[in-house]
Image (tube, rainbow, N blue to C red; front, side):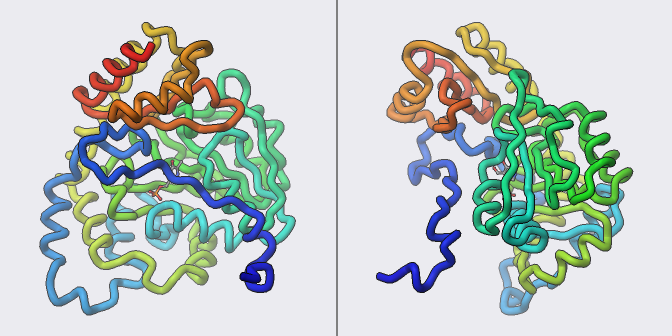
Length: 352
Ligand SMILES: Cc1ncc(COP(=O)(O)O)c(C=O)c1O
């Protein structure tokens, strides 16, 4: 096949994003993709059942205005400044398409969500990686104020730390381009970056229902930005990018009962996260404090992290191993239920 005649060279050259494994069997203790171990709110399940009727023949609201109205109330952000997407990944793709052309500068920390470089290569953008220091913080002076797009996570994956608020804000004020703060995990953190976005019109906040709301399977993300930025993005999104079921689920998740259920699960996960960190430190792992629903545990020596990952998998416990030079001694572990965390620790102790 003559793929060279059909595809852009940039696509032929690039590697695709590698998602965490999704095993078919239901017995695996799945601590590899930062899903929430608790079920979604009963309000959400009711909303799904209520939608399953003849209305499915109709298109959904193109810009999900009913959902945007509720998001606007909950997050106190103008409706015109909200974009809803088929997961936050879709919104990231949309942003890269709308903002970056060939050779435009995009920058992010050297360790962060590994989708950003994939999207950059797709756009043939000029990538700048800013190295994180030994405490996993960037030197904000090393970020260029000239990049068209700057991204980082708050908390940042896969360590789970939040960068210092004052440094982030000062950079956003200086930056000539747009800044995206990816808050996929922020409900597990102490604070969020809305104050920065309220003060800096070039700064956007990205959220998802995949983690704290236990809705990774539903695919719902949302972006908060200045209304004139959102207006440009709305021009390039698919007409019906968020389906009818998902819009109804989002509304139910943001109802008072839905929000209360989410917060209850978040409280449990935060407590269990802190116990898991303690246990792993007692086993000799270096584990930075986490503001997220996952932790990064590093340990030099034998057995190496990659073999721990493989052997845990053989024993029915999936965690994440990244073949990145700075992460080769580390395992990233999603916080599960107390029973799942216990099973992970038991198998890990056996392997050690
Ligand atoms: C930092 C970060 N941003 C975005 C996403 C994607 O989330 P979604 O499920 O909304 O596409 C993830 C998923 O793991 C993530 O880790």
